[in-house]
Image 1 (tube, rainbow, N blue to C red):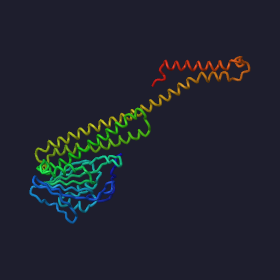
Image 2 (spheres, one colour; image 1 turned 90 degrees about the vertical axis):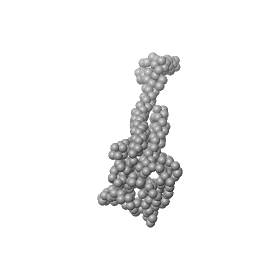
Image 3 (tube, helix red, strand yellow; image 1 turned 90 degrees about the horizontal axis):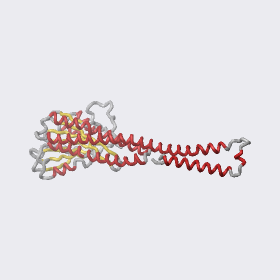
Image 4 (cartoon, rainbow, N blue to C red; image 1 turned 45 degrees about the horizontal axis):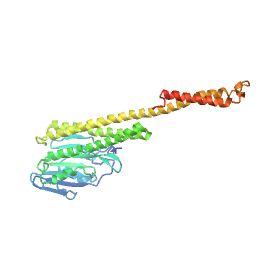
Length: 355
């Protein structure tokens, strides 16, 4: 089952009003600035009292990482320092946004979805990730604390590496790339769920199984809706050729585009399998019902001649010579047994007992 963010909470408010509109409770805000160049690396915390985002090193890249959207004052203070448009600020807090790309000339705003498996609730969970790329800086906004960007932090902390020797646009690419790479783990989880349902659908089709298939179908459809807009996002990055992107970076975004196409193919294939499981479930239920009806039909067919004989000799006529014979009862029982035996033999010859 997927947690869905509710739209609302902002009805009647003017554009640019900063209100966190996520369904989940807002996570306590943690704000850090990770500044680095090829020789230096530094991490420091940002607070409302000490909102220092100015560069400390020459020709350095600043990554302002904000986790949690509860402290609106601190976040708006940081955004104002970078002269971010109020509508972009509003979208950062409106966490029901679809994935998108917007070019504001001096900076680029991108929305992604952090999709992960929440083991305690046994659900696929969606969080919004907002990224802003400017000249020598990247701003990232995450709804809650997680491990999504930890590999990037580890790569930055190493004295040697491409991230440390590159510009802010490469960091921006890395954040998008690692977010999309995590989607493959969701594909694997969905694949395992499909495999766990395939055999029971054939062997033991129960109503609870139909509920599981429907829930999986809904999850796959929602996952597909989150992946599909990413093609447009990466297309725009490649097509519009913003001056914020250095030459040679297009090959990396081409690789991301290839990943998105692969994800789309995989999810479409899984979607087709799930639709096929619906048909298979209905066929299995129908076959099971046919087996039950076949057994009932055989039993009814066997008892038809027996009912006829017992009904025939149960008539209240006075002159029925067989009723006065002493061996008539065992003879009638013997005839009934012979008739049942002959019918069972006939059904076996016709393979009516085979499934």
